Amino acid sequence: MNEVTLVGLMLYLAALGELIAEKAGVLNLGVEGMMAVGGVAAFWSGTEFGNPLIGLLIAGIAGGLLALVHGLVAVVMGADQVVSGLALTILGLGMSAFLGQDYVSLPAVPQFGALPLGPLKDLRIVGPIVFNQSWLAWVAVGLGISTWFVLERTRVGLGLRAVGESAATADAAGQSVVVTRVAAVVAGGVLAGFGGAYLTLNLAKGWTEGVTAGRGWIAVALVIFGAWRPGRTAVGALLFGGLLALEPRLQTFGVEISPILISMLPYVITIGVLTAFSIQARHRPSAAPAAIGRAYRREER
Image 1: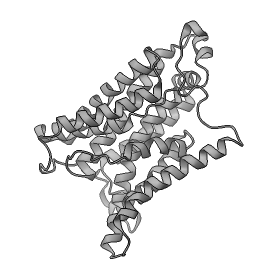
Image 2: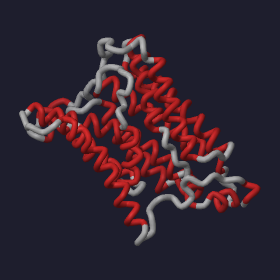
Image 3: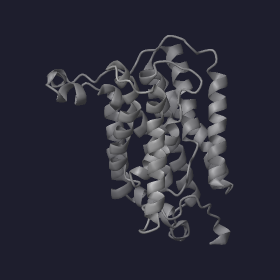
Image 4: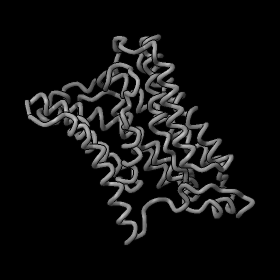
């Protein structure tokens, strides 16, 4: 169960960042690249300083800086968001492979330790599952709750959602569309970097080229699966985390199923989820922000 939580946590951090960006009307398909850059930055800094917290912070900065490129190109310059996001993924994967070539097969750095919760972790069934998680797991929970609160209960969240629904209306009301969108994209990049850090420091416990293995695309799909809601996205992250953790579990219990087929399962389900939502959108209004993927130019208002 801990492995399911580890994978789900990694996916949730990246998906939460993508949710924030999309709520502001920016589609960022560069999550895979940002996770890869965050992962190599975390492993590099964690190895050099011997502290996973430093690795986490450096990963967030690296992911945020890479996301800033997407913000400048897609938001400020008005380039196509799909093309910019795909280019960001290619850039991030290539950059991480180059920067991490000297760190392949190095021993794992210190991991994020469990939060000391005393006798709670010794409770039957619930203890190991809920109260024996790393402190970053609790941070992720707090980030999810905070994101929901900010988006739904504050003026900042109202402004961000307004930009994502109707940029022209928000601009007319005095909300800076460019600043809001760029800030949302950078925040999403920071969280994607956190997800990459958790991947290399706690899950894979090492760095190798291609370590993200398409998990960034699953994070993008989770936002759609969760209907752009932090809570439902968290549930989806745990479900997909269970699917990704299924392969080693089945091998442990001696189940004779091809590991190739098992490893394909999460991605097949991702395609199925996207297809189902596309079909559903034909018959009922989509939950997606209305202005998502659309560049905004004030002179065209």
